[in-house]
Amino acid sequence: MITGAGAVVETAPAKLNLTLRVVGRRADGYHELESLVAFADCGDRLSAHPSGELTLEVTGPFAAALHDAGAGNLVLRAARLLAQAAGVGRGAVLTLDKRLPVAAGLGGGSADAAATLRLLQRLWSISLPEPGLQALAAELGADVPVCLLGRPALMRGVGERLEPLPALPPTWIVLANPGVALGTPEVFRARSGPFSAAAPLWATPPRTAAELAGCLRRSANDLEPAARALRPQIDVVLSALAREAGCLLARMSGSGASCFGLFATPEEAEAAVRRLKAAQPAWWVQATPLLTGA
Image (cartoon, rainbow, N blue to C red; front, side):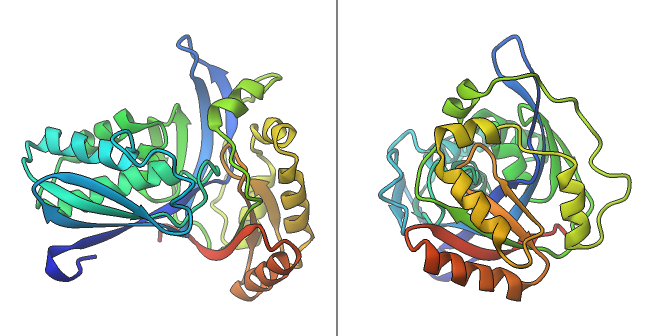
């Protein structure tokens, strides 16, 4: 979206790991994953104005929790990589409105980096070929390529192998975070047990939210047991979501600590948010549609 005075705006939708299987470990120590990834219609917001240098300001309800807003921030790293790849000598005044919890399993930093690549291509009037852009995304982090794709996909390997999926059915999501951060490396270190076998998602794409929940029940998030052991608050969140009327499935996203509940209607999702906020005022809770990819 383009706003006044040459500014552009881009959203960075929250990434949801509807499933997450750990299927192996590579020689370099990284884990091989298989994950059904989708996106929610909520997230951070980036804006940019033309400038001779690159600067970043972080605002929003979770700005204070973002410890690295300096040169190492993924937004600035993405901007520098894109400028170098495209031979751009201009800069930008970037503003990140941080609306998602930090270290929450919602891909916030990766989504911000992907949004930066989209945003600055428009601001600088450039268009890198898709393979080159995806290569930049992979250099920034394992989740950045799927966030750049921005639609439902099966993500394999360490995030570099993406298979776009047919549109998902209309579904509402209730996101809930108990206000605790949880780093991905910490969760992987705490994980134990055998690796999962890769498995097909479904024979026929689901047509309703209930069918989607039924398909997801056949898989899991393999990081959930380790995350729950590290942050017992996740158990409380999952139990609270599962008890809500109309909740079709409650699951942790990514490496946590955010969890989601699937609902068929906005009325059920919004009623669940009201009850959860009343019972747990310190939690971050939000109802949002799933971005189906249609």
